[in-house]
Image (cartoon, rainbow, N blue to C red):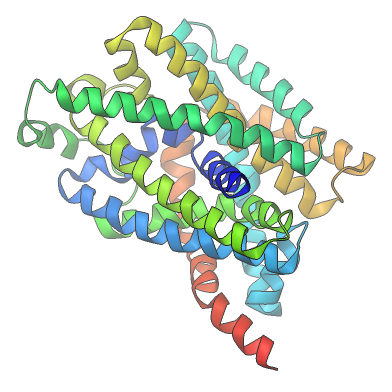
Length: 351
């Protein structure tokens, strides 16, 4: 059971990085549609649960150390090339967004220049990526429970202390910028880009677990956990639209309003979640091109992270609103491949 929960927690940790934990993604993809955005959350939860289960199961079944072999196996030679490079592009791009998110935390919470947060995150990510896969998974899994607890606490408090009804908050919510124009497409796009960014590490993580049943249940619980967190995050933001409408990190602002000390604690956890996703992205990206644990892997990782450091100064909100939907549309290829993967594997086993 401990291993199942570790896989589930690590899967949550991979997905819920800067945009999710800050509330910015949830605001753009769900809350900006008002009431109907809640139905979008339910659609996303169902998809996350199924796809999380499939990813870790595939990883365990193939005992992979990189996403490349699995993707080509389930996609075929030609589609495999497309999906492979979509994942590669996503890993690097989201890594850049995570580093930019660290800058936003330091600026909003502490009034420090974004450069300080960006530099700090770059250094610790660079050091962590040097570790082996088992240690990286343990680090990622250890931080996620703190976020789960804090999001639940903030959300429940927000709902219990609402000054205005959701009906009054909805017009403000509808005025916010949406990442995608249609609520249903937005929900699918959100899952698509998150699976594109989490697929590689989830496959590698599953590959590190020889027990297929444990890997499968871990992925399923992780996907379900992500859906529940989305719901609580969405309700917290929706109930405080008047307060958070103009902030890059809505959940952090709510935590600050509850208590400056709580805001400080949440900013540390948020920094940890950004760190989780950044490590996952750069580790998986480097493992795609170089064998992990080798000196070539370490050199490649350092060069990649330094390049991401330079690109992160574009700005967090801009990167989320423009880059993420694009990844989401590309990631639809991967969603289709994963949905049909069990049937392809069954057919392969019979042959």
